[in-house]
Image (cartoon, rainbow, N blue to C red; front, side, top):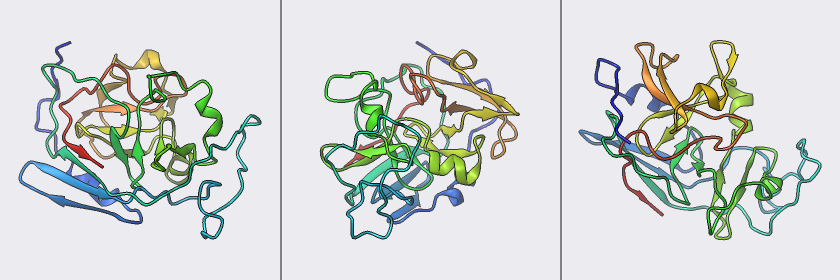
Length: 227
């Protein structure tokens, strides 16, 4: 599907870069891109940490059906290059399994499917820890849904990170209203002003229903992701 960005100025995400802070997280700028390098280590308690780690804690969340998977949080070296001036894509690329963006604490975002065959998160959701993330079979920690440690720390309307196309991700509230899927387009976003982009920008929202973070693909053209 073809889309056009009707915000009548050049998008510039450099102003949100100072909000990124996490263990093993860094970024560098080129003329047209931001290159994030992350160790992909959450900054909150989890039963997926090694028991000797200072952030190790048994699950204490609200899901009575929590079922811890056998994997662990492990340091990674993930490099995500995103456009510094994101624009709408003329042809929208589908998201893939694996990292599709980066949260402000350095943990990567995944799409709405469980691997390996794009299964719904119906059962996998029961392995999400108190921060609403979990590790893969290769010990890559990630978020599919609202990262609770971030919205608890910064607010449910807060800037949460960027997808690989450079467009920002926000929490499930906007202007005092809970955002639902009906408020968003097929890519799970819309154009409007935010605290960081008062002149308006296309941005994604995390909601409490599938597809949670991203719908049928990236609104803009994604940069490179290596892991």
